[in-house]
Image 1 (tube, helix red, strand yellow):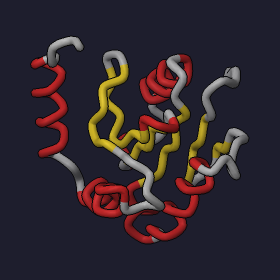
Image 2 (cartoon, rainbow, N blue to C red; image 1 turned 180 degrees about the horizontal axis):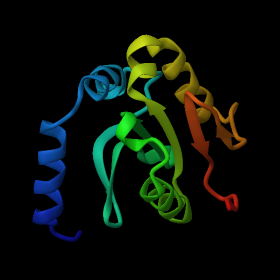
Image 3 (cartoon, one colour; image 1 turned 45 degrees about the horizontal axis):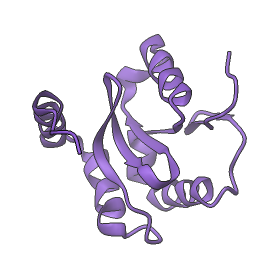
Length: 135
């Protein structure tokens, strides 16, 4: 077993302490296997990036974004890196998490249960499944 990466661990701890309200609300639903017994972790390192939430067993990253993420090319680069690394990526807006929590959770379960497998690019959800080419 390899030793802990102390730089990575400290960065993840810092990010966890700076959760916004939507991230905190979603984490309260995902932590402790509360969502259909799926195990999630937060601020999970994937290469040089940190996923807001990750279900390692199913290689799913869940990101919660504020308006500062609108049309950011860096998010696209980040998503493509994660997808190329074998992770599917689901992005939700903060407001959607806060106002439509049930719908967000149902969408996450649909992805995990393989009922949602096609790419989605909508105003309230971006989903990029791993193993597909995206341009």
